[in-house]
Length: 491
Image (cartoon, rainbow, N blue to C red; front, side):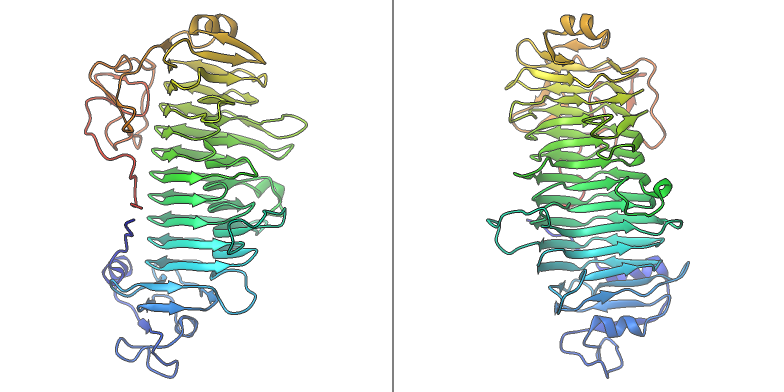
């Protein structure tokens, strides 16, 4: 297990220039000057004397405090970070409290290079961002063992919750905006009915990138709308954000449906270039709450394998009486291999959708023939240029009826007319090298009308289109081959 901690002193100074600095050490004194050689003892005391432009360097040791961040200002952030390469651990706070680090109605703050660990209590929280905030950066931290109980054998009750990193946009008008969550490790948490990393309510504009989220006992990354977190229904949705280059592994619940990455009632979300494996679902774009509409969810260029329930699922699971719906969304150029370990759902699952498209994906599973199901009567649904491979004849499900073989599926669904059923010839499926080999039929076989957007790349950060036509799946053959599984941090 490898933990990545940047040299905070250099990184912080490069971001915000000359500024006031305070230092904190467990052996310091709050009556001291707060300098490197005469540090304060508590983080909160250092923050209480901080003004916009201040960096608080936390020296090595354990700190048991409830941290409340003050606000910075444009161009003058307040930064809380470890000192140099020293390991600073913020642990279970004293007394009944909400979170170890509280960022509430403040802006222009950075939390960087800290270990936030060892808070065992129902409703325990590692980092809480709440209210109306802008330009909050959560960078390169390790958040672990934030759990509703010490004992993993304890039953999960409807009230059992813990939230390692939770963002709640509760202001009815002003959203949480310009939020950056990057290079963090979030792992080993008993979250009960909650998630490892969640954005909920009035959140408008965010990036979640290069994080490792693993060993969470429910959903890994979740962006949410329609739950009443924001009192104004118009603004009660996470929107206009991107989830990219994250590694999400073993986020699995025995008592609830869990996904590695989940968009639930959110809007205008891009989920791209993630590596997602050994979760419940791989990636899901759903809409749980009745009367809510989730729109413009783009799931592209992800590698999704060995998830228990299925690969990628999109749509309202019980529309209109039991859920909302997903509209105007896209599942494109993903590689899905060996999902559906429980043999119940398939590689691609479509619930109720409107004007949605599944295009240019690889769905590969030689252990169970069911590769695609659409059993909820979607409206204006398009599916094409996909590669299906089951090792034998693939099965497809439409409105409760099973069709064996692609030709039968094409006749019944009137979709997938340019798709094919054959081995995509991946480099090494057993070794999880899911790049296209030189003889792959997926090379230059994607949608002839496809044109990549300027920021779009394949699974290795390389150009999405080669030779004038896009490849099927997450890999564009002929580009540089990278280590896609370790998308950001290593654990």
